[in-house]
Amino acid sequence: MAKVGIVLGSDSDWAVMEPGYRILRDFGISVDVLVASAHRTPRAVQDFVVSAKERGIEVIIAVAGAAAHLPGTVAAHTTLPVIGVPVAGKALSGMDALLSIVQMPAGVPVGTMAIDGGKNAGLYAASILALRDEGVARCLTDFRESQAEAVCRKNEVLRIKTESEEKEEKNAKTER
Image 1: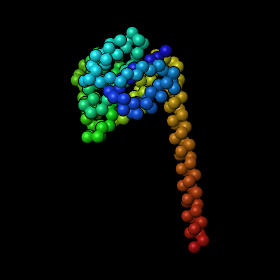
Image 2 (image 1 turned 120 degrees about the vertical axis):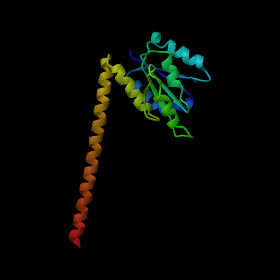
Image 3 (image 1 turned 90 degrees about the vertical axis):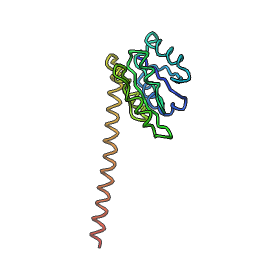
Image 4 (image 1 turned 180 degrees about the vertical axis):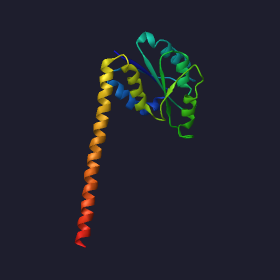
């Protein structure tokens, strides 16, 4: 079974990552979640990451705000793909976290999502796993198709609405 690790810098980051977690679970992907700080509990982060491969984890998502050192710290301890999710903060609206994650030094890559991009982090992790797992690949394809269908339904609703408004305008002009 495919497996992803999620490391949250704070329990308050769960609101950002929960949509991605739900996607992973819906796709049948097992998830290990840890709340640990790169600065306050560095040993817990290191232990989680160093043991990840032997626990079957294939991708790690690291979610952090402010200086956002967590994704880089995770990447420093593994060769597994690491996805960083910057969290919006009060002072700089997440730009500090985004820049901290996206500016990793050469040799220690972290794939970086948008600020508060937890859902896309889950989808990106699933995309990586889909390279070798047919079940995940099917789930991802089905998800994309359902998104396309939803857009088509919204387009049809809007088309009907605008045609109706145009018809009403023509009728109003005719009555004048």
